[in-house]
Image (cartoon, rainbow, N blue to C red; front, top):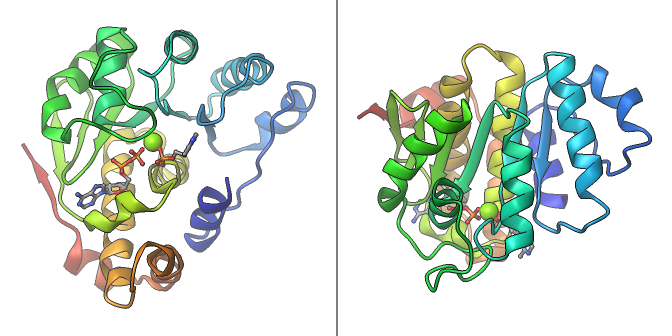
Length: 241
Ligand SMILES: Nc1ncnc2c1ncn2[C@@H]1O[C@H](COP(=O)(O)OP(=O)(O)O)[C@@H](O)[C@H]1O
Ligand SMILES: Cc1ncsc1CCOP(=O)(O)O
Ligand SMILES: [Mg+2]
């Protein structure tokens, strides 16, 4: 939650983190996008997530899902599939998460928890399948980030490997996707690819000053805050595949 909120503030967005289904009806109608992250899922948080997702849909707000560790337990997989039935605009996960969702299976020997045990290229077909079955834009992060609506596939080649060594960089980039989707909800695929590229560029520039994961975390946020249009345009690597 810390890294996600600071990423959003650095990018010019205005995050608010909440868990209560009691306040969701007051809050959700006023947001520009809703982000649901199941990272530290508990049984009493899930109903509030569903209430918020239903409210977002009712008020035509884009809502974005990060299915953290979807394949690690039956509880998480079922929760994610139930949330996906509430029609997110975008789902962003790592390769293992997207494969687990597309196959609706958990506990395979290649799933170890919140970190991926697959390369993103292994999950492109799973992402297309999940996009087609859910109606969401699906992004798989990794060395190359892939984004698909089930038909088009876009590859984003920004970022540095050290980003995997900071917990919640995936959670943070999904938050940034929500902010970009808020700006133009009718172009969710473009918003998702742009957010992944911009976050990757911030990681690349941050890495020029970082000595390891802890300082990269700091420099990534600083770089995101300092990005200008010229730098972004000269550095983003987005290709249609
Ligand atoms: N090998 C890599 N090279 C460049 N960027 C990477 C690499 N691995 C992950 N990233 C970037 O790190 C961020 C988090 O992705 P990832 O580690 O796949 O998510 P998660 O934390 O959910 O497992 C994304 O912005 C992604 O592009
Ligand atoms: C370590 C951990 N445990 C539950 S959520 C979480 C963070 C996961 O973040 P990310 O998916 O961005 O690595
Ligand atoms: Mg993750």
